[in-house]
Image (cartoon, rainbow, N blue to C red; front, side, top):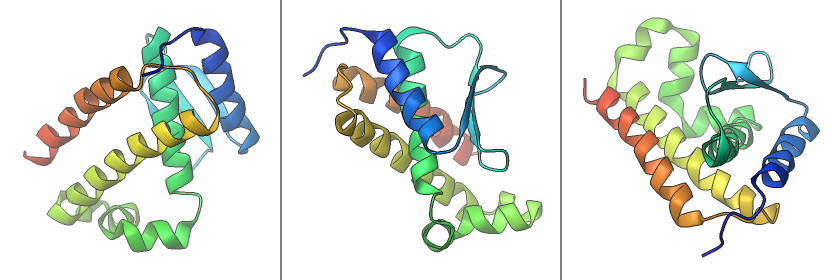
Amino acid sequence: MKKDTSNTENIQKIINWITDSGWDVNIRGRRNEADHFNSVVNINYQTRGKKLLYTLLHEAGHIVLRDDPVKFMSRYQGVTAALINDHKANYSNFKVDTLKEEFDAWRIGEDLANDLNIDMDFKDYNKFGNLCLMSYIKWANK
């Protein structure tokens, strides 16, 4: 298990990766999201420390997932349908595919941390990811 030694350096590594991918990073946002329509990762202005690092890695995971639109549309058909027609967002396929995308983005964020030699506590990353995923699971059960 790696320990977090230089959070600022690690945060800069993932920000550099995001901007090198052609995206902007806004750390003064209202919510955490990868806005694919505007190619910007928005991070809530209150997110700090290791949660900032973990959130940036997760949102970068969304960038990877949506980098190939054809593959994305095939893999997450319920999300794609909701992007085309808001009424589809109420159907279970949308919720299930949203859950799949969220789980995948956390996994890819961990892969990116390894690829970028980001020194962090992966157990803590997964614990934080699980906490965030639970909010999606509760939403999907409504």
